[in-house]
Structures are given as structure tokens and as C-alpha cells.
Image (cartoon, rainbow, N blue to C red):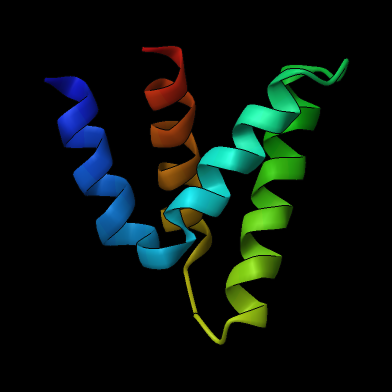
Length: 75
């Protein structure tokens, strides 16, 4: 049930960037970085991708989407 909710949230916040965010978080999970380094790398990657696609997302929404992606992948 929570995956359905997270899927909706991710789609609402990121739209087409949802898959990019999930792939980014998933690939960083395998890296030997601290959680904070992973979070910063994922945040920066998602923000850069959004900017390159002409989307304007507030940092708070990117952070929310990032947390939702992490929770989605842990389930």
C-alpha cells in the first residue's frame, strides 16, 4: 500500500524525472559513500536533470522526492 502512495507522490513531484530519481538512488546505494554523501549526490543529480529539462523544482520538493525514492526502494 505504501508503494502505491509513494509512486503517486513521486509522479506528482517529479513527473518524467521519477524513473531518473529511482535509478539514481538505486545506483548510489551500491556506492561506498556515507548516507549523507549519497543523499547529496542524488539531490544534485536530480536538480541538474530537472534544470536541463527546463523544470523548476524547489529544493524542498526534491528532498521530499528523494526521501520517497529511498523509502520506495527499501520496500
